[in-house]
Image (tube, rainbow, N blue to C red; front, side, top):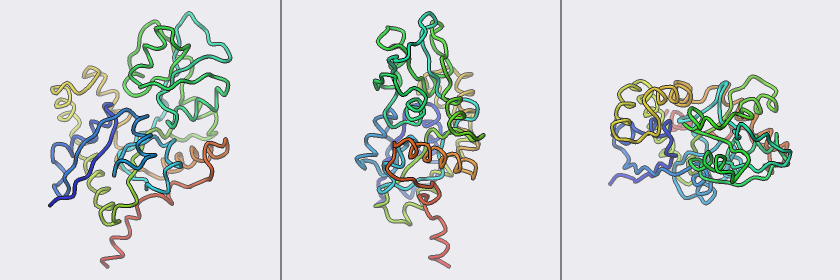
Length: 287
């Protein structure tokens, strides 16, 4: 009997795109995979409860779950000159203690927002509801994420780019760590290594077959943007750098953790490389 593994991810285009190769059975059949699509705040909350074996998370959450979850190298999203946007109504400049809607307390964008705007009054909402909250005057501003950064109401303008805030605090030219993947440590190590290989291969296949998968997603009405915007979005967040974290990306994750620790979001400072799946174990075990 195949082992059942739940892959928890967000319903935005890049996560759906990267998981399609798994869903369509293009990466082998050693495990029986079940997909669970939830907004990022819910995913982060459920990771705090150790609910899913493999889950998409915000990199900003990871130090809080490091004892229970290891980091995967694959299915990652980084911003390079782009990222979430703080928006407001064009005719309503922000006051010092403005009210803002964020997509979750443990997201990367929430951490960076709080560094830049410590006096703002924050509420948390599903990322799909943030734009309307600003338009309807429930909040003074909101941070848009996922596909919403590409198209938003013409009554809104960008107050600040989270990318610029990241560069301000990071002080280095590093990509912005947004979303990653975590896997429960309670899984056998050999299973975890196999799962990382399968998911890495899935992301690689998705990237190499972008046109086909994009068409399939559009035909199934699984995407909230049109074909052109989908292509733009995937180029941003589901590209060749999503397949496996490189050294620069790992340095960026370390910088995020350092900022969080320095500003007391985390109790201890950790390094990303110390929490990756030790893939070399397989070679050593069977050598």
